[in-house]
Image (tube, rainbow, N blue to C red; front, side, top):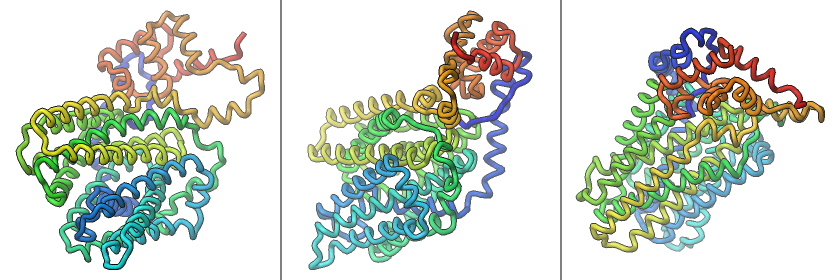
Length: 514
């Protein structure tokens, strides 16, 4: 899940360590510093305002600051909104051509922010005397869910067509701005907060629709210009990860707030900003030090932070800024990382953004919803004793550790993604040529002829595909020295001296089968 790097090492035989790994820390830090000035652009601001509105509407506290009320119908509007959000995201992925035509339309692209704004006002108006609260809450939930989903996939397209360098800088910063806006809005009276909350999607949607022309870059692309992804395997992979983290986070947050009787304002208002600052710093530092494999390393840090907080749950006493920050930091960073991963997948592998973000972000949102429902269920068993708190903490730690098994690796992507070039080639080849040996099969032939070990064969496949040394080390969980030794053995046994020569050798073994 690291950044793609174009690296042809003509000196790999003489110095594989230098060519395989390189001076990544200095290059990454220089890249970060050189792009900090461009953060405050229209795309970043629009995305930040959208995330702020999502925080305000989807953190399950809508009723408390928009209406000054907290009845059951208002609480259920959050569930309705998230359900419609997931349904529309999945529909965008499954009915991509229709969704793209809608997104490109000059008039229809403005429907999403209008729906989100009207939905917000419906929720706020549901407490007015004489207004049928169930109808307004359901309508508000449905409209906000539909509107937000369409805006989400639009910004997904924006970041799909940008380089990973820009995306990795802008997205964490946008989430931080969103946290600051959220903290400011919830400090206002409900009339001012309702007005600002209803305006946010309009501003964000206007930036997306009229200034940034989100889908213009893909408008004239041929249908086969995008790679193909196995939707079922992709959904199961990211869904398992999102469900595990969502259930764990939802359960612990609900138990923590309920058991220690913390108000939602105290829990979210300032800790969310502090957590946003820490999240941004962690991601920037990790990516500057390991630009080729930073996202997986950041996820390890996130898992550690969440595990620490979950284990502290039975011993925390009352409201603490540290406890609330830790509770929000883990899952907040997880959301940022998922967005970065989806954007990188779509950009690097030429995947359709409707499919990538529709399925990917839809599964994340579904995980959040299920986690919230599990949290509500657990709070019905109040009061909790020490054994119950310990059980919730242990189960949550187990879930997030389990989620790490489902984090995407390059080998996973290779199994579920068919490159666009391969699709074009398969369509153009004659029946005789269509039986050519696949790339991986050619690697296996060379490995057998040159007596490579299984691990050396794995390294050769990834190296020939263009991965850097850092990416291969992260993918195979091997050290820098081990990678260098394997690479040296590969060159010695195959008689090649550089990556281009190795690729040429593999290509020569992809001729027709005898």
